[in-house]
Image (tube, rainbow, N blue to C red; front, side, top):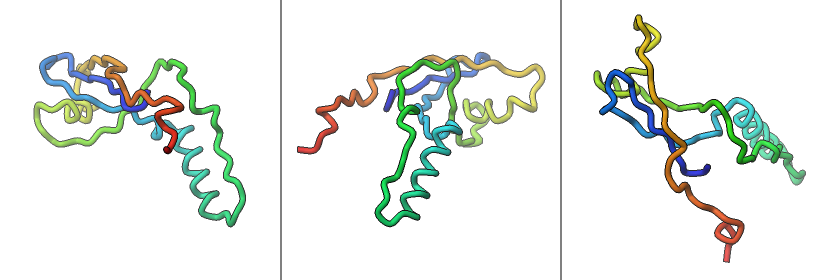
Length: 113
């Protein structure tokens, strides 16, 4: 999934869409594991840092986490998402993905030569 993305569009403006790259490091369990490993590495002198590798799976999920920046463009998708909580009726969004080829890493492509 590394390097793949989702396409998000506001249903009321289907010609306005935005691509969001998958960033699993913001899922709370990943974020905690990563920050804990970094903190342990910084505090350690020569001890091995433990990281829960079971978090690194290719299993499917029924949810995604998006990191959004509100560019405050009136017709922008991120603005529509930010403003959705204040609207009645609430707008709907379509999400398509994951899309793209990703980085297509293999064991041999990541080995240093």
